[in-house]
Image (cartoon, rainbow, N blue to C red; front, side, top):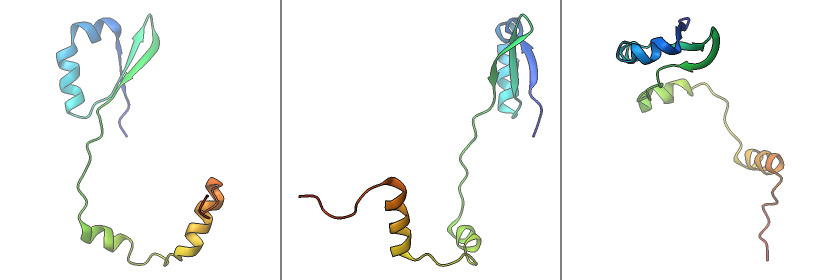
Length: 86
């Protein structure tokens, strides 16, 4: 992981175009005011397409899921009774 470059509030205002291009390249910044960090600028993570074959391969050796046990665990965890109301 890259270390965020520290920039001043004045640099952010005066060099915003260069900073935006840096964000496009994946650079991160910590903005300071009077030497005190006040904010962070970092690129948004782009979503990536993952093929079905890759996902199937990743889970090929996973343990099987017992649907009834899974549902019981979920219901116990969220405190809901699966019985119909009424």
